[in-house]
Image (cartoon, rainbow, N blue to C red):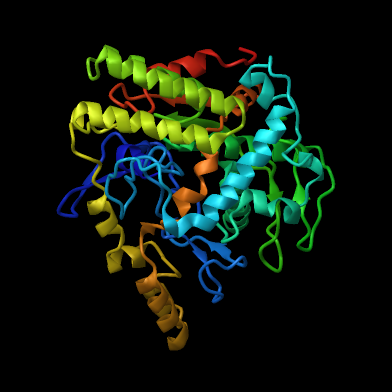
Length: 454
């Protein structure tokens, strides 16, 4: 959520690494907590556990307070605007480093497409995704164990594949957070973010809402490291299920989380709706010609058809073609803000700032700050271990994060937002008019199509 950090956080980071206070920050009114999602962004990383690259037995750990920055860069194969990446044109050929991952995601897609093929073709996409709680392979959400589903939620090397894994990691974090700071249960919780957070936020908020219902109903919970499974978040083909599995000897106690609302800016939320406005948007802004708009509409139609078939990877490839066509037709305009011309997003000042030793120390990266350790007379050996780990922990994006989430990009979380509204959770959606990727027209279209009890 680096976009959130820059635009609504308490400070701006300048080119010379100086900090300027943001007078319009939400931090003037609220206490703000910035969280890295998915694991592998900011200071967080997938821990090899000493077993080497590609191990199936990786642990997830979060350290410090980084965040995710870009739009579909939160798992997209489009512009790489995350720290450590330069903007690149879409490439339909897959990176050889991820051949195994590509095969894994292709198998997921084939299973999903086979499932969608069993549904009546006359049903619209919206009906299809809400038709059943079954996953590909015939498994139902409530009856799946963590072990059965871990392959669907995470890659073999331990990276997040979709919203189910994002939800699981976030719920574990929140349980630990409220266990450590129980007084925060008295404060209302609002979850905010931008761009690809249009997937993360409704998924997490809905998971919280569903589990709160279960806890308030005093339903039995497991303990001692056993799984606690929540009700289905939505009866969707790509259903999101919470599996709060203890990754420690003693799992944190589950508490009612005081969720009150969500805020989403310039979000990627309902791809099947949003992708259909790109050609008209660019054409009526005078950025592309009519023949170019017609070509873009062909790509859009292909993407929609593939989404309806459950072929999300293939649909995303056509989405990449749309952005390539836009860039090649406009002199490589910045798709996030067309006012910037051909200048891409520059995250280098922020990355440099977050990697300064004094910043990492003040944010307790890898462990408590050094002054705290000395004050509490922590043994020198332990201080050295923490300081060494702090030096080695970089603020960056793991290159395996985005490819692992390619199968999630073209999925919709719109039904979750309707359910949140029906249950009294407040929703704020805001939009910048110069964003081509997630344009105001596309957001307006999916918002107006929400089926909720207003």
